[in-house]
Length: 428
Image (cartoon, rainbow, N blue to C red; front, side, top):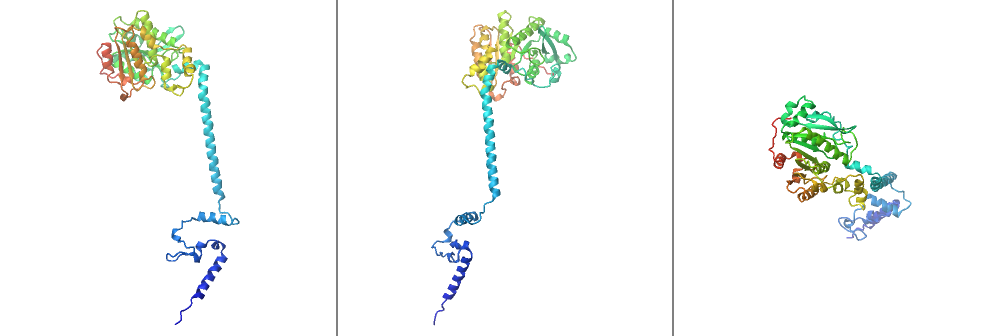
């Protein structure tokens, strides 16, 4: 029996395939998609390679390959995509250009400031005093009641002709009920009481109505002290312009004004904070030189001298390691006759000294207060007088101006001053 010959069919199929390839040039250039190249049931095509091992080609890859094979083929790229890509590139160039200009301006400013300060020394004086920074704003210093001080009297004194300075007198909290509605004469008469008096010298910036200062007045008042504070010339509502000599003169004038109204047996203490510690040591040195030292000096967050403080201040951080820093900035401070040399003054002071300093103080670093204490403890003029240093750990968070929050402060003061704390139960 003869086998059927299937060759005509095969030839027919082959002819059909050839016709399709001829009719479609794309198919003719892609043998892997031709009928002869297909693998059936896992068999290999004519090329001897299995389709299962070929990498997958995306439609985009096919278009790129076809364009490369046939340059006459129309391009499939989208003009809109090219436009978006170009716009993004230009945008990035614009941002980079702006950043470069900003950095250039910052560099110019950075380099210019030292020269401006050197050429205009008065700028450096303003930065030391900061008397133009009046915080908090919109406070009427004529009304201490607005700050919660309902037992405080506001008045003005004239240390020099045509020069007026603003003063607050807060009586001990035990007197607050009696103080309601009273005027200046009553407040002056209260100096004859047995309560001790603290003359408070505030630091730079702000006024006598600053919040942390008001809170300290309240604490000291609750402990039974009269608190007298004032704004130096050029601060708050006081006349004039600031200077180290003027600040010291104002403090001396207020001290003498108080001594005239106090009994000889009534203790008068001087408390300085921050820049006010420099004023305080200047004042006490003058008092000791004339033979009438105060009963005690309390320094809160003190420094050694203004040059060392300026070099350690956070504002100087960006210039501290700049060549010529001393010449540009520190010598300019000295040229303004600003020294506040507490490290020198302690060698001329002869009264008990208490130093309070928080370890986390970033404005006046702790090491400056400790250094001043070491100098004071070795001072010959302070030999025989009590010199005490009280640190406050960083964990308490008292920083530069919140030592008044310490619950230990009443005991610290009573132990140092030799007086029993007289905390008031009445709310002032």
